[in-house]
Every structure is written in structure tokens, then in C-alpha cells.
Length: 302
Image (tube, rainbow, N blue to C red; front, side, top):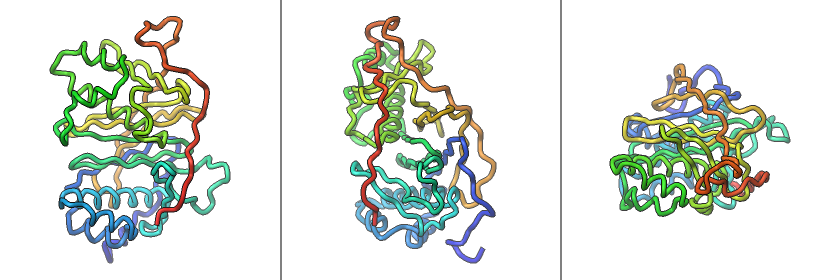
């Protein structure tokens, strides 16, 4: 190795028909290394954004999460980290600028999403379908209690939380929040999509049973993967079903200098909505409109 910016695995990591999931603790990258990587890899806009943070911990996490993202995209595309270019939708969702040789129909186009919580960072990548990821710490609240976030949920979800033992409510509210964040991020809508316009339903064993989409989406069009990391961290992934559902996800941990063999996870089947004719009134789908929303493409990010 001749320099910090020249650590190169021998070959690209194909995304293929799997979700590629990367998890990196902020402490997995030394602070001085993160500073040097941000200087070499990040755009001027990203470097300025890092400097805008008031607290050192937030500045460090931004550098780690954004160098992680560029490293992951390099591993999947072969484009060197500083040469990767992002465009941004009108709602602020970043995506890769078209890559050389991409087919015009976007069949192999990579979609990615970044999420971070104090101390940890996650990147999810898929090919030819939209993906969203969210990570949250159960022990970190930043002025909002987990009880208060439930106010944003649907009536069905609030009733479900109220029926749980008190000791389970905070973790279950956080679980719902990560699922909702992952879905709205995959849609490219973020918090502009009201969290009470769609709902998740769980069975008596707390397994995800159904998903009631908002009015502009179709039922059965999404797969959801949930993980617990380091005990107090919840992670959720939402990935679009395009043709055949995805069967597996690859999970890699640590900063990916030389990624080793991933942990292979089984993806749950697409989550259905209940049939209105048989579901209890409180669990009836909000809508099952067969409309595919569009992800608008905006301007390049400088």
C-alpha cells in the first residue's frame, strides 16, 4: 500500500440480485484517517457540510458516513471514490449520476441509501430497484421520547402499541419508526409522506404480518428486512419488488478496506396487505391502488 487513497481490492463486488448491506461503527475508522479521507474523497460541498457542524462528534460521524458511502460505491462500481458524482432529486434524495455503459432502461442501475445514528453508519445498495435503510439507537433520544414519536403513527399502530406491556413499548415504537423511515427513504419522499398514511401490522408473536401502503402505492410491492445490531441498535431495510423478489442480503461490518466474506441473510417475502373483505376493521388496508410512484431526477450535486 503506497497511500491511504490507494487501497484497492482486486475486483469489484457485484451487486447482483441481492441487497448489499454495509454497517460501520464510527470508531472503526480512526479520526485522523477520516479527516484525511474526507480531504481526498469528498466533494467541496461535502467538506463544507462537515465543517458546518458545531460538535466534533457530529463532524466526525459525517466524515465517516460519507467516506463509507463513497468507499462502498467504489467497491460496487469500480469508480474511484473522489470521481463518484451524485445527483439529487427535488426532494433531496441523492443518487448516482449515470455510469458509463449503463443501459438506457436503467435495469442495472444502482440505487443506494445512507443512514446513521450516533456511533454507527449503514449503507444499503440494490440494482434495478429502489432501496431505503434506517438505523436508530434505542438508548439515544435527542429530546424526543419514543412515546412521543408514536403520535405520528396510524391509529392501528397506536392501538397495537397501547396493548403491549409497558416494558416493550419503547422498543416497539422504535421498530415502527425504522420501518417507516426505510420505506419513505426508498420512495424518495422522506418526511413529506405522513407516517399515519401507511401502516405496519404485527401478529401475536411480534412478526411483521402486513403492510398497508399509502394511496399512491401498491400492496405487495416491498420487502422489509429488520436487524438488531450491538443490542441497542435497530436497522430496517425496505427494498422494492421488481420482477422476482430478492432472496438474500449480504451484510458486511467494519470500514471496508478489504471486505471479507459477508454474512448471508434470508430476505423475508414481500409483505402483503390484508384483504378488506376478511380483515378486521382496524386492520383494513388504507388503499391498494396499483400505481408506481416516480422518483424525480433533479440537478447534479456540486
